[in-house]
Amino acid sequence: MKTKTIILAGAALFFAACSSTPEPEPVQAPVQTAPIPAPVQTAPTPAPVQNTSPVTGPIIQGPLPGSLDDFHFVSGGQGRVFFALDKHDLSSGARESLKRQAQWLQTYQGVTAVIEGNADERGTREYNLALAARRAESVKSFLVSLGVSPSRLTTVSYGKERPIDPRSNEEGWARNRNAHTNLMSGSIG
Image (cartoon, rainbow, N blue to C red; front, side):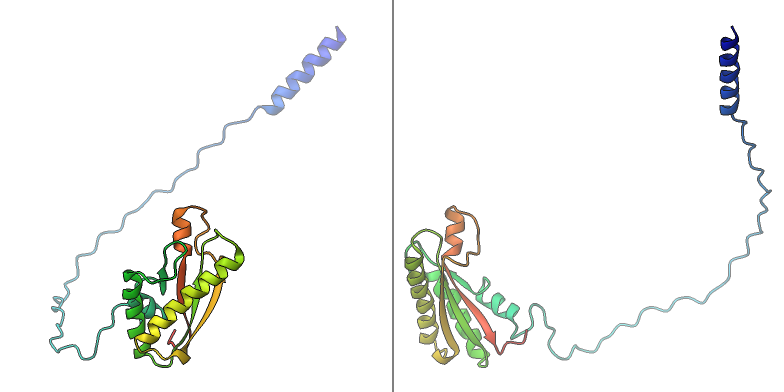
């Protein structure tokens, strides 16, 4: 019986300690409103002045002339031309792109370029290096035939070592069969 009394007394103390008294609500100070001042009269806003003088000088829209972005814009595709499977001859679309590249290179005579030949992953390393070299030489020969000095152009073959598309399917392989005209010096930026 004594144990029950001790347990009941302990439980009563426990519950009494856990109870809380409600917090009083904060008293809000009365808010006073200030009288609204009368609107202030302002002078009318004058009409904007229109410039009627003609614009002098060119307005440049698009890439900065002579820049790498300009070269990519003019050549129509990051300076790349694409090839059919196991081919190094230039398609009509590639010739059109290279004509634009040649015009740009003739305008900016101080620019040199490396033509990088590439192949897809199919075939042996040696075969793809040779094919990519023929692709780079095809591009260089065509640019030279259009008046670009051969001393401004060099070629390199990467074979299948530098794919631009990692996919191992027809779309990826088609993108990786290319020659890239990479500007090296003389461009603005």
